Length: 123
Image (tube, rainbow, N blue to C red; front, side, top):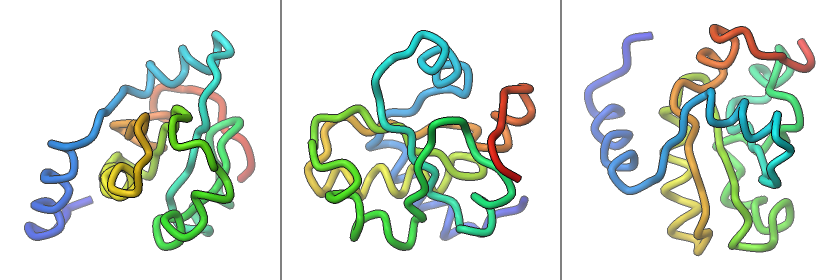
């Protein structure tokens, strides 16, 4: 997908402020039973077509409103993902501004997850 210049500018600014991990990092954490909250920030229609195992859905449009109920402890490790790692970086930046201290954006997103051949739920 070709993204617009101004969108990429705010994504790059967010990526400079947030921690990122790879698709393989998340797969390894899941395989080892590492405790963290996996959050899909894509649109509901994207979620319905498939998502990562054990993920919860808090779309980018509502995550700031709903995160405190879903993940009340601001020290919880939260890994966010979207389609490719752009929207998750923006959401991670916002959660950090809200006081969440251990937020990570999965670079490569759902597309990278599927491309790597990892399991998908739903869809």
